[in-house]
Image 1: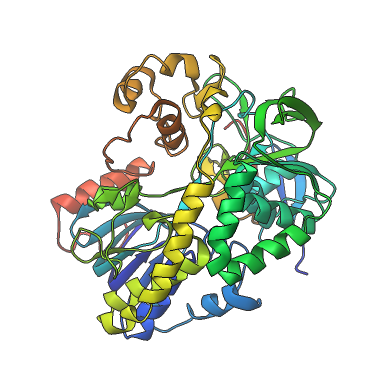
Image 2: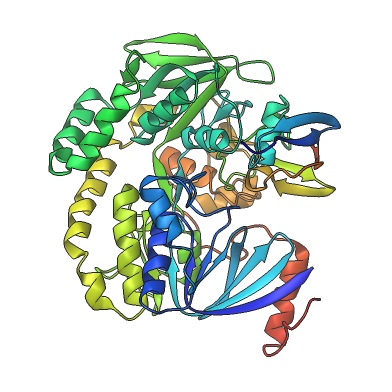
Length: 81
Length: 432
């Protein structure tokens, strides 16, 4: 088994397995991904890059579809953009 | 940001079973092939997480992609078709212009989602959606899951999740037992499908499987805690960590529609060689009809061989195609949505999740277009991919014409697109 990867979600460290997506990391952290236009918390729906509910800020770039992006060591993930 | 330009004999969009089969077959018959996919790795949804080093059919097909004639472009999303034989795509760090002699569209399908109270709560997900997340690193061991909706995917997902340690509280299928029995009869000519079905059921022994059952509401404070299920004549409350809910599949037809491919009954119209109404453009897999892996592989091989100039090879698959198409039609009949599901949303239930447009705001409108213009329904980043199929079912609205960009892209890429149009030759050398 390859070593787990550590990323941060809103500053908190989270360990994920190699090959995990950023969306999975946010769910492991127990966090939602974004807030909707009427301020509801939202988390992944489709898991395949269609619904855009899993958008988050990754390494300073906002609105990334987190279910399509693999975690890399030290990645800085921010919810609520 | 970088810009690049690539040219192929055959360009395949979508690296699921149909696209992989198309690319492998076209390469085998000598074509220079580009295989483009939005996901980080090939396999599509059904083979997500599979690798060429694994076992069985997925590995066998994925191995074929290691061919000198194939260039795999993962993490690349097509957003425009500016002219015949040209597509524009976006990568993590730039813009890509792709030109081709022949184009094979294998854009796959997505789940159909229907709105009900609480469906926007975190941890209410698609059935395939939750499976995709688990394949992408979400631990599911010990979690309580209700699987609901309709279609053969429900059993496959429940079985997969249970194998990975989930406690499946219940499987709720909206179709009736009679409808499923008829589907079983239709399968008698398809022995592999029966074997698959039986092995799934075996892996799910002891799990309650309800027919004519669906979620009425999901509840929880900021995150899912329980689901109210309709069963028999009454309802039942079930505590759970996840609700995996999808109502069968709808084809991804946005790119074929943008290119101008003619549609028939909601699917892309193709002939027996997978040719669309647009010259040099083929379509294979779920966009031509929801039929599963076997049909997708057959259609991919037909499209790949024809695109590489070998229609004689393609024709050898004709009989298998006809037989598997019967299965696709049986699927559509067996898992047709029951009208009661139209009454699930309450007035305040959100239908368009991007713009938070409620059922009550949409109900007065007579068409998708007027609702879009007045309420912004379908105008958010998903561009109606979730609420479009839902409103088609709820209100019988037909989808609008498709316009570029078919996915949101960064302004820089729209600028690059405009620059290329203004400077058609030699514009793409180096980076901008």
